[in-house]
Length: 264
Image (cartoon, rainbow, N blue to C red; front, side, top):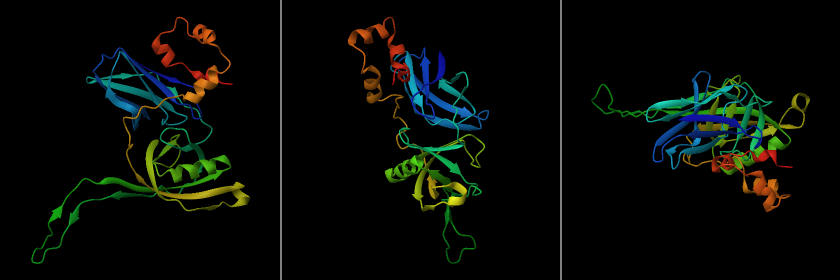
């Protein structure tokens, strides 16, 4: 059984295409991304499931940036790792939608990364008792806040992300003052204002308060390419041209083809 990780040209930052081969149908698997020698771990979208054939293909658009990333697949208690890849990006931080279709490169300000754990245990005062009875419960990761600046198209992208009401993927390069390289944040408040023109130009400065959350659809499998990408890649080709392009290819090779090579 082998796991391979390949960068594909389907946007910026580039997503990673993962192929787990040799896994028997009906076998459960878990695929995760890791960085910092395993200190940072994040789930791959659709990365927990049951194989329906000998090859399982997944796409990760939530990896850490500008650092060595190693993917691992755990099957029947055995861990298989792929060769490390690096997702290059000019910025330190990117905020994006769960599906990766909206991406907002941002400039992160050091606000000391404020956090508040969600402590859920509760004690009730009872007259006559020297110590209150308590109801104990595991704490949650709680909340935090990001302070960022956006310019131009990134401002519109961040506004769209916030208006969607969905969790936002926070991706960093490890040098940002955040606890994790990759995390999911559900925005609660997002006041913003015109940034200081002298310092940042025509831009907006945001203070985003959020809750740490899990993926609301962890089993959703992402695709690196859309139907529109396929149509654009094949627009100038005939059926004969299509057949010639994939002559001798297997189903797996077709399924994992990098359509960015054909896009105008």
